[in-house]
Length: 294
Figure 1: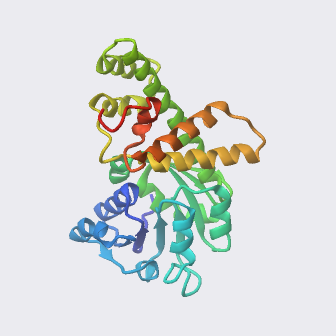
Figure 2: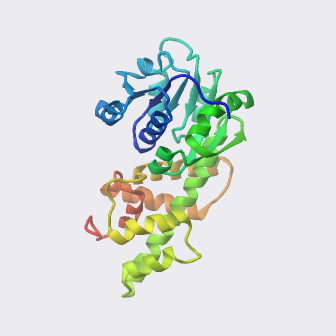
Figure 3: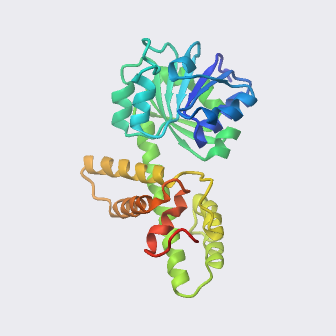
């Protein structure tokens, strides 16, 4: 297997960005990092990363740059804002857009960049840190082939789906499924509790059944403990991705009632103040007087 050579910039040090940077450092890759709130970089600097004051400084001298910011607005700023990656001219390396944004926004913001891939990541921070992600990639075949050594450092499975934007389309489909599954489990538990059944026993039964997906089994532990802090995936991001998926469905002329219902519930839970909690906090929106004590 061909090894990736050259330093890599990671821009955006949320859960996934931090995991990716950690993985690269563990694999002996020189890593430069940037985050809007600089303190997020401190733990990575302690293990060898070089921090930068702005995106343009972060990508200087690198052969690849991975963007893992929250949304299209943040991606636009990182790419084309003052001191953005492209503020000093074309970026000569490979740009990997791993931020979950609308497929059309990927094309709009990066389509004029010679070497760009959009990557939908399946997994959590632990998977990112250990190189166990599944990566779904959009972009030209030549760019994918050139970027494959880097992607194979980050994922146990790397799939090229087609044109630029394809990675985001797959990511939104996967998060559509996750949002519906987690909400369905939360609804079942609320009905169980209202019927007098023990929440923890019900969740154990669900997690051990043939009906549970791996993500439901994983998230059942959070619901059982009532632990919504230190999120694996923030509720606000799930709501954002469901809204993006809803937009894709509308553009395609599709009516997807489960997606529509899940989107409304996730948006309501976010509006109730649970956006920075784990996505299982969608359960708060199912009972109006639930509050924050679970």
